[in-house]
Length: 317
Image (cartoon, rainbow, N blue to C red; front, side, top):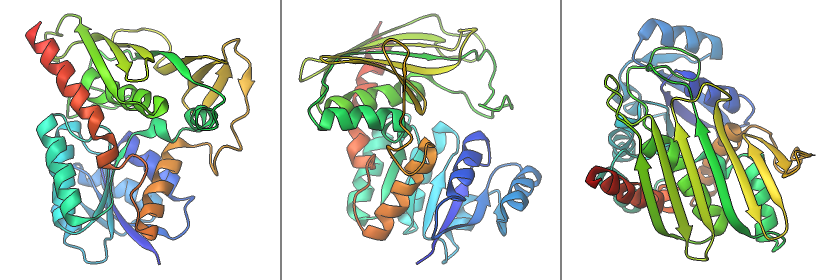
């Protein structure tokens, strides 16, 4: 069985998925959707994709398409995920699942109704560095006392990971905080029972807060401190410090270090060192095996309830 895929969004993250899929047997990308037709054709030619369109509906109408991967602007995620499920297609949507609780609720409800595989790209669940820590927790060798997380970018304009102009505005809470809120509850295997947030000034042109601080507490007593900024002129990305009862770990993307900066070999944790590829492997395996994937829309839903509650706090402040 070859799973035939349509991929929407030929920007920085769409290309990461195309690169990952090249390494996965039994999967073929047959349609590429993006808003700039000429640029989309260039990407399609590079990856040998036959069908190109600017309209997701064109790809959803293709009978041979089994599944869709959405790497589109945040504001479109819930609506497009619903469209894929209504068209009878399995779907993986990049993080975040939605930019509102209502959107997330609608997706979870429709997935239950259809029984299709619907998964959200919470990549941190799949990065080898975080998988290593999860394996230690599952084996009973490590328990989180505190997570200290920094998510830092230097983004005064709408640009993507490749430095290209974006058609939409990124968001610290609904996009970047979603990674850590979900990962904290996942790694603790315990729901978040307390959450607080404060934010800095709203940017006059972008209309979003450029700095934010979030505190979380899990039911098992573990705590998390998350600092986020679009103003940081320094190392970019998200850096995790796991402080536990038996060790301290520093996770940077797919790399892992001890608290003393000694590198830990995570090359044998999974079949790849690429978190996006591992995420895609899980999506396709769940389709083939007829099971719920790790980071299914149902499993990550609580994250969006927490984000909603934090948004309510920030709006009331």
